[in-house]
Length: 355
Image 1 (tube, rainbow, N blue to C red):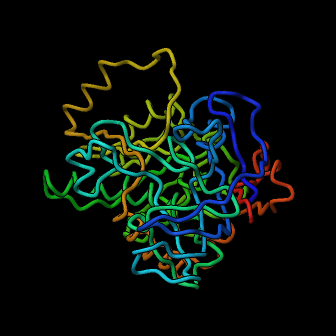
Image 2 (cartoon, one colour; image 1 turned 135 degrees about the horizontal axis):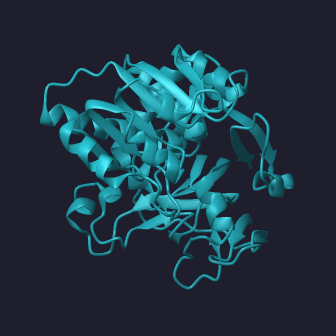
Image 3 (cartoon, one colour; image 1 turned 180 degrees about the vertical axis):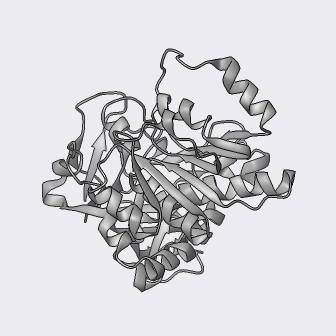
């Protein structure tokens, strides 16, 4: 079968290979992959920034955002049938089976020895067929067959937003009205939509002009859009109840801390490269203390967020008709696979590789 692979840590190693077809073991599903989303994590792995092949394999099949159909049900596997439309989660628990992994919270793994499809220690889904543990798979309704590949990025939002509410509602009386989303990529736009579903007034900020596709998609949800080229973050006077930082920019992440209001919460979901400090650390910590603010990081998502995401994906599709389909701006066939991992410009939002 055909699979897109890298040699982890080696820039320029991206290749389309013929590899052996996987065989499902007890409790596993063999999946016929339909679509794989391409994101910043994939591009970092392609560049050699990180990535880890499975034990004994010289290569890693990449791809963690996926949509598939069940091709074959492994022995002793229940709850699935051939033809089911499904999305697997990304992370699997650590071999030590730590406290959080035992509780179904592999996204909160204590040891760091977890494995992740297409990222760390497990082959991903950028192949014609793949296998995965059936315990980490959710079904999707056929109505989401065109946009279901967006479920995995939506789960990043589900966790980042959901945990913000859990934190705030546990520590005080909290009735948020306003939210700021930093970034208008797929995660930022999905965060905008989810927060609008929750009834918040949302402002989405990015570097694209106000007549760009990303600005139009944010506005489609009823959110306000701000181009930082015209209105720098430092000039914004609003103080938001919830700030969702999804740019991965260190400088933006630092500024985000000054945009939350009293009792506010900031959720960081980006991966930030090292950068010399330019922020007044004293001001940051003083604002944190005097404002009773919370800043926290969130990565990955467990099965519960995938289940919530299926329901919310359907709600977004119904309420903001056309939004999800327009987020997918580039559909690349396998025959042109290299284009999927090439830099995009203009109004590109989400690239999907179609098997």
